[in-house]
Structures are given as C-alpha cells and as structure tokens.
Image 1: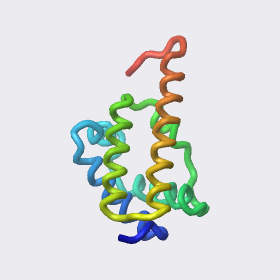
Image 2: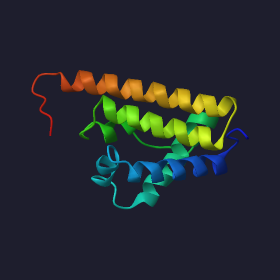
Image 3: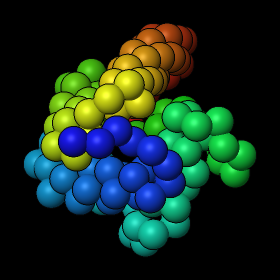
Length: 127
C-alpha cells in the first residue's frame, strides 16, 4: 500500500471519508444540518489537508469558528476520528498517512478543549 503523496491522494481520502460521514448515524445529521452543497466543503477540505500535510498554499478559513456553534460533543469527535483513521488505513500506509491521523487527533483534542472552555463560560447556553 502506498503513502499519501499529493493532492490526488488527498482528494481520494477526503471523498471517501465524507461519504462515510454522511452515512454515519451519529455525525451525519450534524453535517447534514449545515451542509447542503457538499462540493464547496470538499474543495475546502482538499485545500486544508494539502496545507496541513504538504504546506501548500490555498487554504483560507477558520475551522474552529465553523464548528463552535454546532451541537457536538466528545463522542462526535471520537466517531470522526474513527472514520478518519479507518479511511486512511484502508487506502494508505507510511509516514504521511501516520502524520495525517496524528494531526487529526491533535485537531480533535484542540477543538474539544476550546469548545469546553467556551461552553463553560458565563452566559453560554447550548442550542
């Protein structure tokens, strides 16, 4: 099995991953509640992972700000990581594949921590 080598591989894993996400009983409804046209989201994710894994220019955005208002909890992040890891492992093996899973784990941990701090602040109400 080959390693993740560039944008074509990123497109493959992003497409397969989000197909799994859309079908997932736990996290699928969260995404369905905010994404009606998937192609712009997929294009953004291609650019995001290309920047994360290969330092390529082209990603613009604030991922945390997009996730902060969503009704998500640690179990959502756990499922997201499970699906992400399954997708990577089914298609790739090597240092970049390992790095992709590590970076996803770091992002999930950071998002959960920031959400916890934000939600425990005064005046916050879960929507």
